[in-house]
Image (cartoon, rainbow, N blue to C red; front, side, top):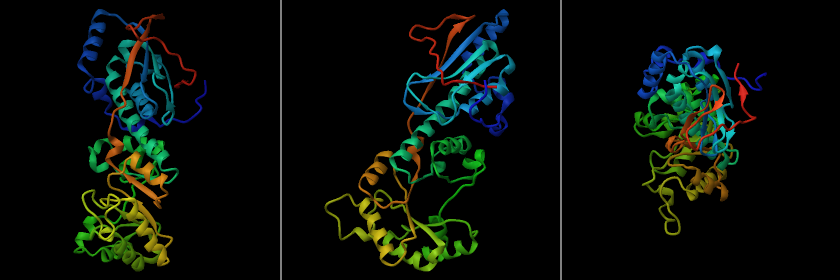
Length: 353
């Protein structure tokens, strides 16, 4: 059977192969069960079936296959069938089957299930905000909210789900991209709070093909700062980023409070910045928003036609759970599973070569 799509090369994942083979990352009872079987000289041929219980966007499959390929005791004797990263999956749908001597892959269950759970969580969360944004750019910004060692796989999971940009080179490494970013608050502080000066110096350094985006909330006056930066940088300014903290009210809204929640990056603030830029001939300057954005907040902005060009989304994309389960459903060619589980064949699975 010919694969319909290309999978990532296992070498991309830089797996700690020897530690995985030794069961270092494995729940102890799997290691113990495998050791008991080997001591008894028993090598049961099983069919392991993997699924989860939500509508989801599959992530981590190429990584899971790499674990099986590089860390099992006999990949060539296993029959592995799987869906692809980025595939939509239904509750209880089989995403992966592994058939072969159980002792050759029993020590890998914890690892491949964990990979699928984590990456599918990211892919699913990102796809939800991509759909809510209606085609506008989603920038994946959770790097500062989690351990650095999850960045590579999470960034790829976000990429396959439709995120346009990621913030670190590590997140972009599996597809050969680069991290993107803005003129940060810290650089502005390094120039004693002068956003315009910081932006000018940044542009003097920046490569000509870099899209320059400047944070404009340092002085809590996003309308004024956006105009100041646009006047200073002209066509070199690609966009401004609104990032007002959720417990602050931007200065431009102080006279308008009363009939809406004025805190943080809100719809009224975005409209005021857009109108101010357009009125001075800076229609080319995009507006990026960030700070507490969730799928619900993005959907609300889009339903009301708020003039946002891109959404920067952070910690909400790594929250939640999307657990996977693996069950032996066949032993020695005969049905054998715990009560409530059974073989669920899927015509969508493709044999992994």
